[in-house]
Amino acid sequence: MEIAELKEKLKVQIIQFLNLTDLTPADIKNDEPLFGDGLGLDSIDSLELIVLLKREYGINIQDPKEGRKVLIDVNTMAAYIEQHREK
Amino acid sequence: MMFYINKTNCISPQQTFGDIDIEQLHASVDNKLKVLEPPYPAFTANAIRRMSKSTRMGCGAALPLLADSTQPDGIIIGTQVSGMEENGKFLNQIIEYDEDMLTPGNFVQGTPNTISSQIALISNNKNYNITHVHRGLAFENAVIDTAMLLNESPQSTYLLGGVDEICANNHTLDTLADWFKKEDCANNDLYKSNTNGSLSGEGAAMFYVSNNKTNALAQLKAITTIHNTDVDVVKEHIRNFLLQNLPQGEKIDLLLSGENGDKRALHYYTFCEQLLDSGTPVARFKHLCGEYPTASSFALWLACNFVSGQATVPEHMLKKAAKVSALKNILIYNTHKTAQHSCMLVSIP
Image 1 (cartoon, each protein chain N blue to C red):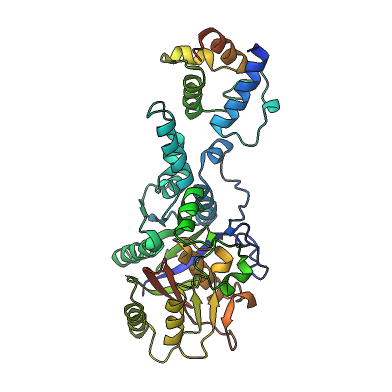
Image 2: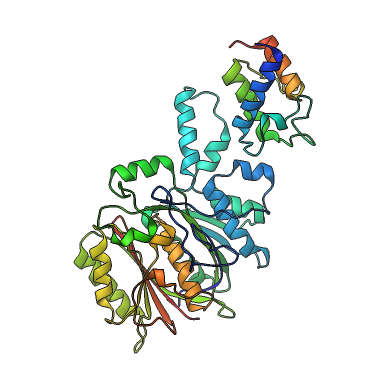
């Protein structure tokens, strides 16, 4: 799967997992921060995103420091998935 | 004395929130009466996208009551299904992911006490907080709990509510069990149907209550409940309730009947009507809100508005009326699935 295609799929999954029903994939920019001023996600969402990575890509993130580096924006998540995916 | 209802709010399938208009009947769709959800400005975007529908409408109806009131000494909610839709999602996750990697969102939103706890969290209320889940008498048990607390502590105030949502899975099961109609039926034809079942409904009604009569909308004078399917036992129970609680020389000015278009339940309502004077007006409310376990809370909201003069009884509600005027005593009678029955006597303060 091309990285651009992966990013679009990831946006759909983020909307679905986090119930962001008033957003479309086009509303989420690849470099828009997921937390804070960007999408405004919070700590419960980070847990949902870690579960998303496990369920959809077979990726286990157990170290919180690693999670902070991965869950920055769609670009960082997609890059990490490309390197570590088992599905 | 029971208690006084000082303020009330209701989110229902009709225009009951904000500017009340129950004259114009909103139609059912696919045998369901779904609530007209208002905007919820008090909730953050992150909070609202996680809330189940019952939590949304419960908090949405409750918080405006608390905005300009003293902090209640307790939050007491009656609900049977609560966030059952979210509960179903959580249970499906258990199966789909083999009990692994479960997230807390659906679980938290799917538990019945989420409504009362979410109201407490948002309003920063750390007092008594409880949820009654006794199926079709969940709201009535919340009322009884509130009355007992006010009896022990007369200076207290409480937030009392009844909330339930339509859940797809429960709707299917109850339709298979004939509790909801299998044939198409519009809510304005509900009482003509003469078949089994009713229309599915939902709603949230909230009441700020106390022993303070000043500016009260209504007084809830008495309540009774009974589990029984024997119509003679139920009839006798209602007769005794009226004998014990209706003051000498007074009469019931309006019966708010929970008649719901299910031919199996009709005779309970007919017998209740026969206990009253032949000229007593009878108004039905299930074509407004549909059938759900805490529908009696919607009836109590209606009664508060009728006795306080904030709304008049619309013609489409009237089954039998010479003339509805000067409402002093309203009797609410409701049965859930013909086994759980309740009566509430509501009067002017």
